Length: 66
Image (spheres, rainbow, N blue to C red):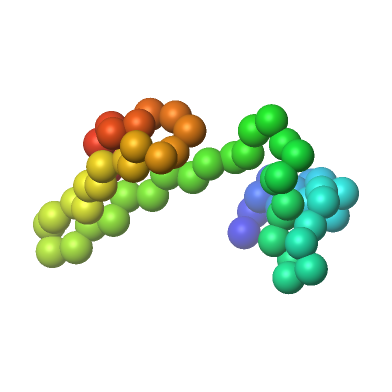
């Protein structure tokens, strides 16, 4: 890992320490207006997994995601 990446990781760890957490260590977003998301592409044997979002989610209902 390069010097820039180490510096960024250090900043993220310090920031993370200040966030509210559940007893098991997960970040508690209960009282947050927003939360970060992560997009992941799964590929296996040349095929990409796509999924349709639920009608129960807060945004982009019934849209397809890759």
